[in-house]
Image (cartoon, rainbow, N blue to C red):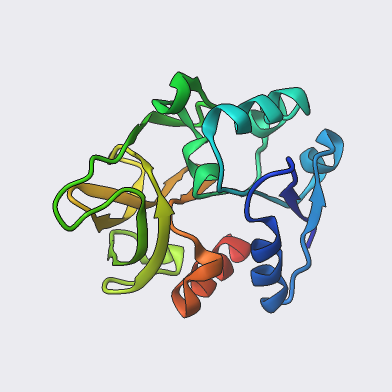
Length: 193
């Protein structure tokens, strides 16, 4: 399988690469638009700031490639947020592959921001490899609004879309590469999609 892991000089590419290698697939780390366009599957990694990430995507000539990609595309953490229309972080226009916006989490008693740690899931679509009651690992200060594309949710003072799907586009706000067996099942389902 030709799996492209988008390399924009930021993010969690090392841990994502290792997670896929454990599943028997070695991703190709690349920012080359032609290689990404030709891939069987693409992973857009996370960790970082929306404005910086979108600037890197634009500078590499990848925005159009990612918007037009017809095969399975997975965004992880910040990578999922970039799939949306816009982010309140630096008022950033994003890729627009999923309707809606990303907004800052509001701290509440017992719920600090960033949300870092394990949260329990309610799963609407078990075809994504996740199951009700799974615990997965989060590390984020911004989250997408809940909507019709949500296929798994966590509760962190409000419903947090943990995973979303729209057509060939899949997103994980959580870190599957850090989420043990549940994360591995999620990545296996993406590889099988």
